Structures are given as structure tokens and as C-alpha cells.
Length: 85
Image (tube, rainbow, N blue to C red; front, side):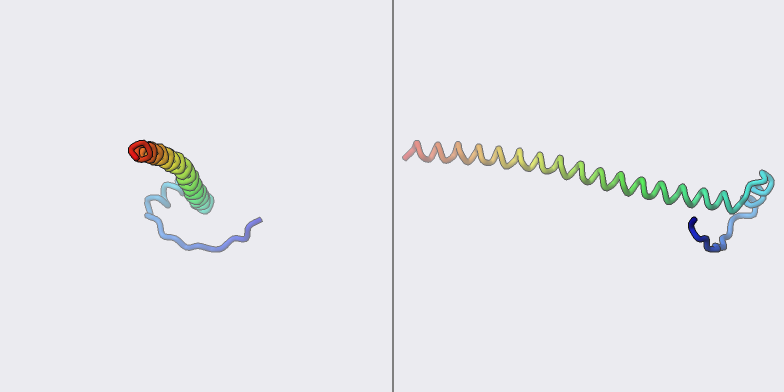
């Protein structure tokens, strides 16, 4: 089990009062919120990594198409120069 550390925070009295009226465990609510925040942040980071990897593959494909068309143009140019000699 993870060790715990004490954290002191300030929240608006209205929020604290609401949680108290609802008989909510404030520590659990804050812990759940922080865990959700961390999980969402990790998920977004993974999505960014995946997005950059996907774009890398797309960019590589486009670069290969560019090289292919450049090579075809070079071949045509060389053929034209060879025929004109």
C-alpha cells in the first residue's frame, strides 16, 4: 500500500459545507479528484505520444512519395538530356 502524506488545502467554506451536509468524506473526495486529475493527465500524455507517432508515419510516407516523384523527374530529365546529345 502507498504511504500517505498530509496535505493542507484551503477550499471555499461553501464547498466544505456542501460536502459536510452530504456526509461526504472530504479526504476521499479530494483524493478521488487528485487521482482523476493524474489519470487524465497521463491519458492525455499517451494520446499526444500516439498522435506524434502516427504523424511521424504519415510524414515519412509523404516524404517517400516526394523522393519517388523527385527520382522520376530526375529520370525524365536525364532521359531528355541523353536523347538531345
